[in-house]
Length: 431
Ligand SMILES: Nc1nc2c(ncn2[C@@H]2O[C@H](COP(=O)(O)OP(=O)(O)O)[C@@H](O)[C@H]2O)c(=O)[nH]1
Ligand SMILES: [Mg+2]
Image (cartoon, rainbow, N blue to C red):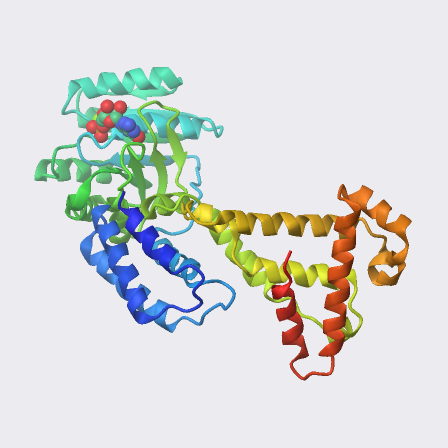
């Protein structure tokens, strides 16, 4: 698998806080290889690399997140700037949709899928057969319309069809067009004909995920013939590549709205950019990683006051401990990156311990949390252990850690760097 090499490189950077230029370069090269093999247009890959290079070196480092994650985030940001965020498809009455694309790209199938999608949202839909090249295409479309119970319109020729279209009462119209192996003049004329007479409000380009590097020329030709406002990628189930779609977004400046995930009508999904990018990059769970980013950036803001340090209580203890441990290695990140051969136990154990500590502290009364001296009383300790589902020695262990932290905090409470030292102390607390 292509992404494996990228992952190996990314793994090498584990725990690093800063990227040096050589490492950035190495990663960019690997990324280029992946994107080009995924059929992303070469020029576009080059442009993307330039941006990445610039940002990776310029970017101010978020200290608590290591280089590996930062780089993935940068790559993600670059790709998303081309593909765009998740787009809602706004359906409205009197909408006229036209599907264009090469022969075999999946237009006819997509007509039915899209019609069903729109019908399920409470609109009446009409499917119109505009492909006069292959008589079989008409039957195929009629069959599909029956299957989803949507009206179907056809005619003997284009002029007749246009006359008919003007009498259709349904809310939304979807026109299927013919396709060739390549976009020739005849097809361009047909599309222009529909463009002028049918007057579509949205032109969807239907492209197959495996279209390859030829994508650019084709997309450009369709775009200059009729103007593409939306993209639907089909056969995403069969190809991990789909780089042509990224190129299409860039060329048409249009968003990807839907993806086809199989031959059946139900195999149709609203396009999710995060899922798509994870797939291209070979990182299984990018979305969770991105959320983690937000969390970390938020948690970084936890302040600590002089008062907190001088009178350390269990509330402050827990808050600081959680902040400190979150900023360390992130247990899930490993799995998210598809890296499974690392000593994950260690990290997972730490998180479990932290949960236990949290349970114990939450089983204390408000007074006990504020005034830890109350915990000299054994019956209180037993009550807390019971309440948190832990053992007496767990509670005692935590109290002793707290006492040590309290003692240390007192020691540097007059230090001018006390805030920093205090926070660092929590990072050092071992379970
Ligand atoms: N696996 C898979 N097959 C698809 C998908 N969309 C269409 N197909 C198949 O691709 C072939 C061509 O589809 P068709 O709709 O006739 O393409 P058209 O020539 O553009 O109208 C058919 O066999 C479809 O069943 C998809 O999302 N996934
Ligand atoms: Mg067709």
